[in-house]
Amino acid sequence: MQRKANEASRVAKGQDLEVEHLVELTEIDPKQARTLLRRHGADWPKLKDEAEALKKED
Image (cartoon, rainbow, N blue to C red; front, side, top):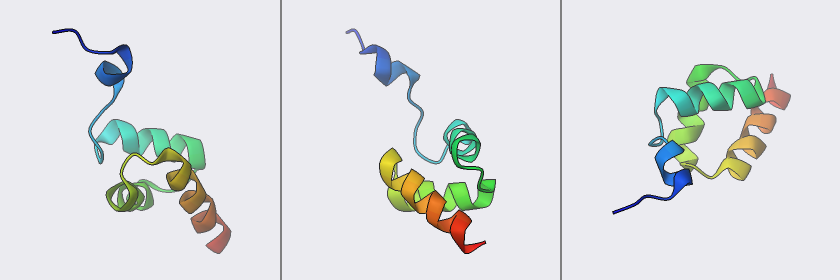
């Protein structure tokens, strides 16, 4: 059984690689990134929107 290329490169939600990626993209802290990933899963457009909202609150 062969997997699609994008499936092999994805990590499960909440794992450190996703947290690091979200932190790099949005410049929020890792704790905030973990919270957003738990809340929204891999919905990256939503994650980016929520992270921007968090940055504006600070």
